[in-house]
Image (cartoon, rainbow, N blue to C red; front, side):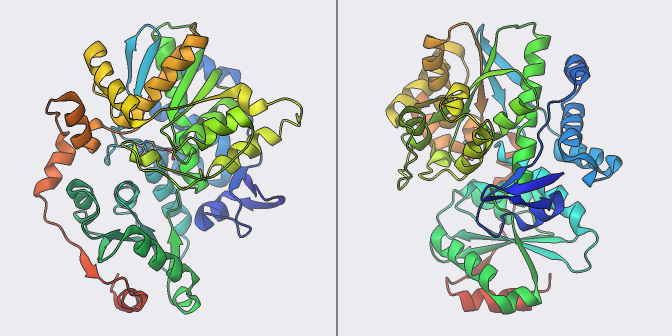
Amino acid sequence: MQLYSTKNKKNLVTLKEAVMKGLPDDNGLFMPKNILPLPDFFFKDLPKMSFVEIAQAVVTHLIGDDIPPTALNQLVEEAFNFPVPLIQIDDKMAVLELFHGPSLAFKDFGARFMARLMGFFNQVEKERLIILVATSGDTGGAVASGFYKTPGIEVVILYPSGKVSPLQEKQLTTLGHNITALEIDGTFDDCQAIVKTAFLDKALNQKLRLSSANSINIARLIPQSLYYFEAYKQLQIANNNLPVVFSVPSGNFGNLTAGILAKQMGLPIEHMIAATNINDIVPLYLKTGRFEPKISIRTISNAMDVGNPSNFARLKDFYQKEQCHTCDMMGQDIKGYAFNDDKTKEAVKFIYDRFQYIMDPHGAVGYLALKEYQQVYPETMGVILETAHPSKFIEDVENILGNKITVPERLARLADEPKSAISMSTNYKDFKEWICNHNF
Ligand SMILES: *Cc1c(COP(=O)(O)O)cnc(C)c1O
């Protein structure tokens, strides 16, 4: 597989280089050079295939022979060891539950696949690789559990003391083994500043092999295209033959971009729906043609509070290929809608009253967008991506519903596990001294 940078298409790299580097030197984003449609027999066999079999076929199609087939199949099987159920809530709407992984959010798909891919590519290296991650809560949990016990890789997670939820903190601090949590006496920005300084510190990089688990690593995008095929399969089995649309609660637009990737591999998707909270940069772009990043605004669907969506460069790149300057190719594929917190809360309540389904605030934004879309396109089957389990946002959801909700066993269990974290100041010197002397 070859990849180019969105800033310079002539500069081709291998999958290994793209995954291990994360970002090209020119600050673009890595993109696959060839995205070919899957063969007809794949779509014929689809209804008989398990999710792991679908994932193996699609990943092999895209990646080719960069990884030997047996190793690739095993890696995929280990990464996706949890179910991806599609729950039909009425005759034109279904919910794809992407929260059955260890951190209860869809980011598990990307993190678990990236961790195993990095682990595979790292096998030939003698020295261990140290992944540095700053987290404001959510991403850290998915990365920590994704890399847990990956041979040859250590993960150091920096989180702001007292500023992540108690259960999020447990997700970062209870694993042990190759996962080390640093509790920083400061803000998320302080954590991020330390990580950035470390990557720029030449002396440190000569001493240790450092890498990031960047959210825009191509290894996180590829696996997110897989569950679109799974949803389509489940609809086929249910004998639902309406044109399929996906409503994607979006922040950095990785998930939606992965849907476009699935479409380019031949999945018949009628439209993608970009659903956002009031951080509506992309819906506005689709309306006006102007991309205007803003400072992000806090909402109850906070994993989507993004004022400058990082994957927009990839979306633009996809549609530039079409060589069509007079027509709006992106607007033909993607429809955008944005909603405020009041509407989101009303939707969480409505979905519960009407369908007895508990939706988290992110999924509720997806529901609202689909509903608005289907007023214009009623003859469609809409799939809402439910990106997180409602118990991850337990306070808001319980307040809206006026009921208690249950926390899944695998998360509830964490509350009793002992926390293990190293307290540290915001001073880079302290971090450097620690990491240079730590016995990994
Ligand atoms: C990260 C996240 C999103 C946004 O996904 P993008 O790929 O950044 O658009 C939506 N919902 C939840 C729960 C998330 O954690």
